Image (cartoon, rainbow, N blue to C red; front, side):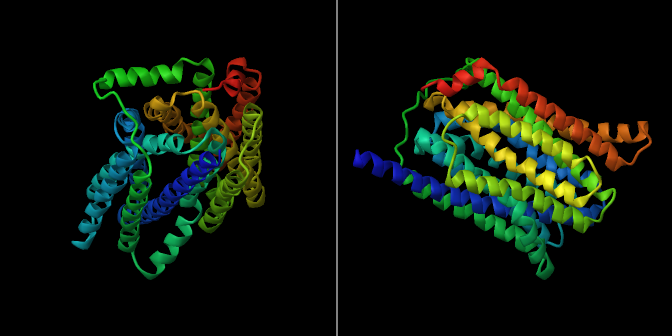
Length: 416
């Protein structure tokens, strides 16, 4: 018994090392994202150009998540993480070299971002599946909270740090720092890899069969299918808020207010992530999931109700504070109902299906806000507020409809 407990503690320490590397990488990625946004806007003066950079950074993760999940079940997951982290630095090195030659053209930045994002797509399914390899069921909740902290760091730490560094240097310094973080995460992953035995995989299994098995894993339980649909809805609502928060605030305030407001709102994820990392959730996952989604919907409604920076910050904080709770519960309920050997391809498919919500939000939210502004002869900010509030109502209704679902409640009782 004591040996078993020691192994569990050792594995959590390995997870912490892996997590620390991803935290540093997240901050580095945020530095580059902020710096490239400023650089491209100064070079082109075009918001569309900035949006294209964001799209190129996002699409490879969406498109390649499924094959990346298959690879995570066929090969050593730690090796895939090292390849994904290490080779994604190539895209940034390319941009840096172009800048050292006298300035990077817009198309060169697009190429570098695309290369970096394509290799980074290998990381997520392998990382999530490795968490399952390392930890016990009781530790999943704490781990999910810590992962939320790492994810929120790029929105909380990176913008402020990047602004300070740009005041004394330029974007090349940010790129050098980010490139350095990639190699740091490769080293931490290599250390973790040494202490984990590689699971035997059936190499003769075709990619098509791997995809079929992954699809079966995420669709054979009606409750899992329903939770994936809820995840897609959450990303759609998050994307709506991300796209429309800026025009909503800038319609009545300046860019400084916008920056402070975004930081305050995003700190809600940090607060919840810290709580979950320390305490975790020890039961009633469906109840916590539905409650957090319901409150998040109220946060979206409050976010758009008035042109007041204090009200916006309070309800924005509330919205983002609920997301780690919802993601924690979704993660646990899905993870514990998928066999270990199918985790990689399953998370690849789940990532693809859930992130479709972002594509819907990015494509429709802005157009809808502009239509409302023109149709009702109001400012664009109020049109954006109307879309955000409507999305919030839909989110709360989704939570109420999900709560009595027997198929979802059955997942909490399922023992893998």
